Length: 150
Image (cartoon, rainbow, N blue to C red; front, side, top):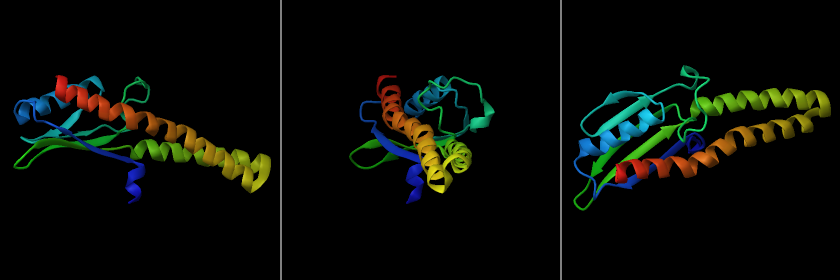
């Protein structure tokens, strides 16, 4: 249940998109534009694995910059075909927790325990929360555009 903090899951309808390979090709092109390398690809899925430390000075304006691992797969039912995705930002969350602990110690030295907790909560909310809020809007939109518009 807590993995909602570092996972983003969703799906896109593939009704008007060609075969599975075409949809996955479009996702792979999106990942290339986002500077994420595909580590595994099958006939109906692909996986990327790109730790944050693999390119620490890369562009930070990319929609998927905070995500370090992800899986895209195609599900078919009798009536529809959907591209599902599950991307993870665990490395980003751990980095932000480390920054929050650092802020905690500065606040602790300056204003005691309550000051430390306020500094830590503020640092974590700002660093991780703002990145995730942006990603919650930008990532599904980027995936939808890549798959449906090519």
